[in-house]
Amino acid sequence: MRVDNPDYAGQPYRPSNGTEAMLFEERFCDCCSKNPDCEIYLNAFLHDTHHRDYPKEWVYDGEGRPTCTAFCDRRIKANGHLHD
Image 1 (cartoon, rainbow, N blue to C red):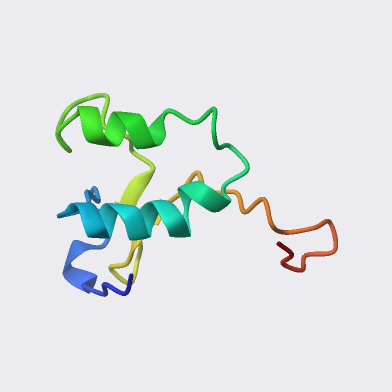
Image 2: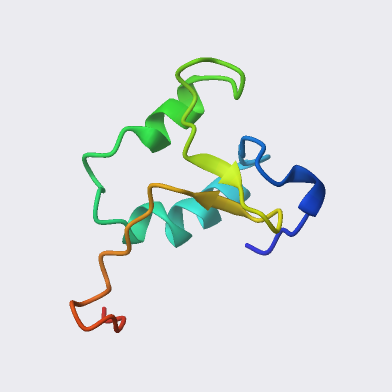
């Protein structure tokens, strides 16, 4: 998933279709240490981006790329290296 649009920086992110949602989930949710207890993914699909319960964590970063600010990569060991 490569989407760069600096004009969107800081704005809420919502996948535009199922494929984009699956790629985002694969990149963030599936690798996150908060999964499966995280409610962010569910709330993103239950609420509109302007709803008070829409996750504030799903935003476009400073370069306009979709990100989850709550993401904590569970593949990183204490030494800082990725593992599967």
